[in-house]
Length: 325
Image 1 (cartoon, rainbow, N blue to C red):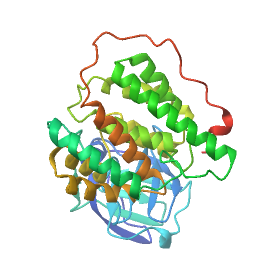
Image 2 (image 1 turned 120 degrees about the vertical axis):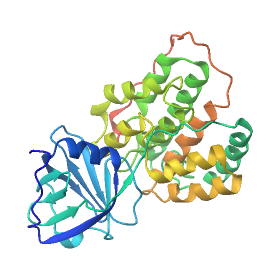
Image 3 (image 1 turned 90 degrees about the vertical axis):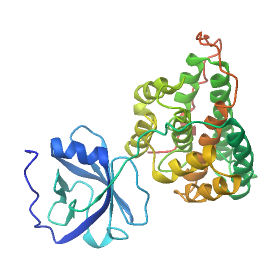
Image 4 (image 1 turned 180 degrees about the vertical axis):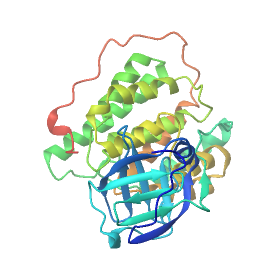
């Protein structure tokens, strides 16, 4: 498709985009594309591009997020969009078959660049303790926050693996052991319950927090490599979030929590935690656990710049411990 080619408003339903990821708009201005509907939910539609990446149409109560268009409607059920429907995207908007047309004229541009703001160690230390207590009190058990008395052996084993591997990730970061970090982080991908597995959600929060002092942070260059090497271990929706988080790009509520952790008061940080906890079923709790883990790394003494080789590789993940994609 030529970049200047407009989308003809022939769809049965027309919606206005309220806000759109600025990076997505820039790509569409340079070159449109034809794709398909990947998956359909009550408040979101995931669209697959020709390169296999996902673009999300989200209802008005959803966050701004990378590669996301927030529309002026609560959801999409009335349009009867189905997986496999043809999608046409250009600088003018996005059309799905003859069912839906989302217009970009007048849309706000949301910028989700990595957070380069400075860290005040005293502020962060105070806020981390307060938010950690709130997470334990208000988080949803079942993922990184283990439920008391697991209902079955599978759930108990997944909870054990999640906790053990998250702790190994934390320890490898503190030691400056890049090899171990890559191995243990990769072992979390695809692990746990949910459409976006708990291990993936934890890493989304962790990767975002590792970018707090800018893209040049010690372990940030490794995040993208971890995701690329483990892309086949999880589903497309979760992989999209991991790819963005590896570059410090996350949804608005997560950015706000990171801001309050580093710049706000304990009460403000605790208030910013609540919208994150509301994400998905256990996803928000798992993301918040990753954020607290990653933010805590910035309070530790700088690790040796020399890469240390790990003597003990991350254990293999039993097939039964993976949630179906």
